[in-house]
Image 1 (spheres, one colour):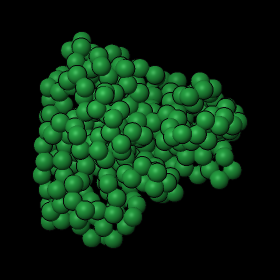
Image 2 (tube, rainbow, N blue to C red):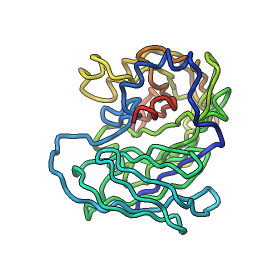
Image 3 (cartoon, rainbow, N blue to C red):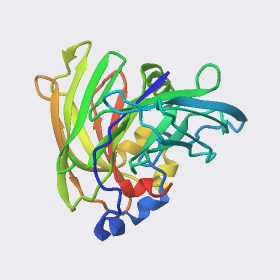
Image 4 (spheres, one colour):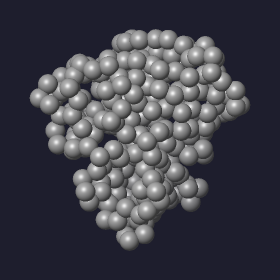
Length: 292
């Protein structure tokens, strides 16, 4: 079963300020957080496959405490079909999709919403995942353990929208050459503000010391992105905002200026030294979700 970890912070889902709307008007043309080409817009159906098959979509939506989220709507973005969670937080519906990683939109009855991207079909062709609310993104793959939260002015305005389970992370890495996850904005932010990615990176239980990290801005659909042959190339071509190193204990406090500009749909943290796999953790705005 795919396990998707989501955190909902109690914030308004009303629009961002007019300043953010103006500066992110290009972002409305993008889909949220694409993992192929895995940038600031959303996942969706990717790859060369065009075979349409009927899939059963099932799973649970739970609070961080484990309590069920009743009445939440789970929608397959590619087809528009959806299901609603019952008293146990369970949902199930069938839809026609290509046999490729898919994207889903989860909306609770009280207005909270989250995007679940790049969910791979199981060996039986069906898709099963659990949505579990949590504030911190934790991931383990290829001997690496990563813990990330957002700090600074972003701390109470963003939430972790998913964390891929081990098998799905490995398939993502194999297909796209990178592990990607991210945070999504819920409430208004007065911009520009300074935010940060905070956390630590371990390998085989030991701190990954003095490894270089970079913060870059970009991700909007553009000619340069379309021409890039891989997500890694697209990531490296973004505008550099800041760089630094992990500490002797593998910790990092990677600051960046949250100031949306045309062409900048998200802000990525990546590690530039040799690791078993490329890592990219993105932060992007609620305005992009409104483009679904």
